[in-house]
Image (cartoon, rainbow, N blue to C red; front, side, top):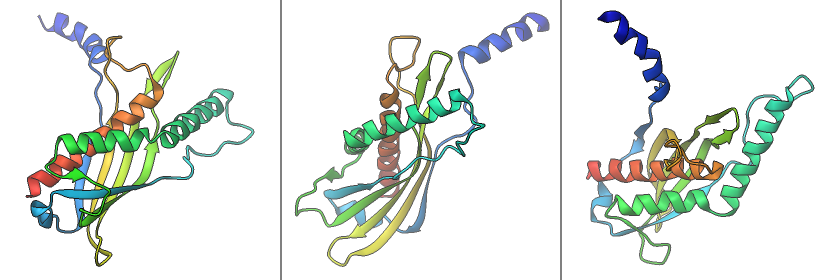
Amino acid sequence: MLIPKLFFLPFALLIFPLDASSSSIKLINGTVEFLRYEKAIKVRFTYLTEITYGEVNSSTSKQAMLYKSEMDNIYAYAKDNLLMEKSFTNLFEKNSKLAIDNGPYANYLFIVNVDHVVPGILWEFGRYNAECDLTVRIIEIKTEKEIAIVSLKNMKGRLKSFTFGYGQSNSSMLEEAFAKAGKELAKFLEDKF
């Protein structure tokens, strides 16, 4: 009986792949309890100017150079169309009591810094999930004083669809990574209240 069970194990791992790195969220500095009485916040994003994948030189394979070029295009498209911001803010608002209001009513500003990003990519020979690392600095607007810093690491994006369970758009995986980050931050803040 042991042999038939072991026979199906490799097939099960192909169907249900394991993800070794899990996402994490930490309060690096300060406190967030003051947000308990707030109704709205402002949000501003700062982006990486360039994504690094290692060196590209004359010995770099053509496939690796195409991969880097495609990743740069995905990131530029998502950044220019504010897809990452919209995904983050939509799920943050759905999972938090705080509304995002960039008008005069908010007392605190969340500066979301994109520390690391890997745009996901779907190629004919495989798929690489999107991933992002963010640092959120919470600033009191009146005093311009930094109140807290929250770190979000390994936020993965893999959009589900009707075709074998995975999304078919490269930028949609990147959007999903930022949406997950917004949702996780909202849950983290709600737990701290």
